[in-house]
Image (cartoon, rainbow, N blue to C red; front, top):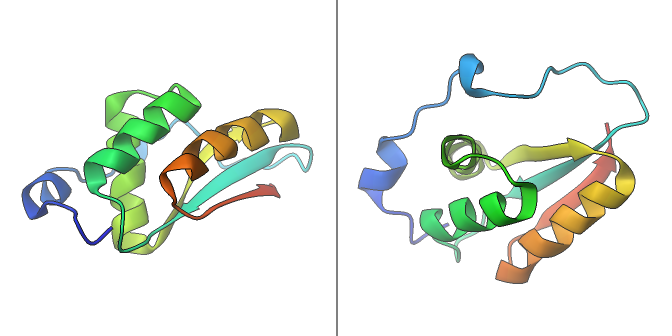
Amino acid sequence: MGGVSPVAASTVHPSLEDRTDTGQGSGDRWIVTVFDNDHNTFEEVVAILIVATGCSMREAQVETWEIHNLGKSVVHHGDKAECERAASIISTIGIRVEVSQE
């Protein structure tokens, strides 16, 4: 995300209280992981996460911060069909996305 605005990127700091996932894997749930790139802006990624997953602006900002600073982020949990649907939408902006079993 080479076009990330330093101001936008520095104003979002994730904390555990902001996360909605529980970290408890059941083996039958799937996840969507989004990976950083040098093409999409911070704002583009935030917007597509909101559209694809229905998350809040704050959650999308936290996940985008993770993508940019950690190289990737798990942005969605659900059954396989739901995760594939979300991944399909996210991939429309050209960012690498992966669906895998939790």
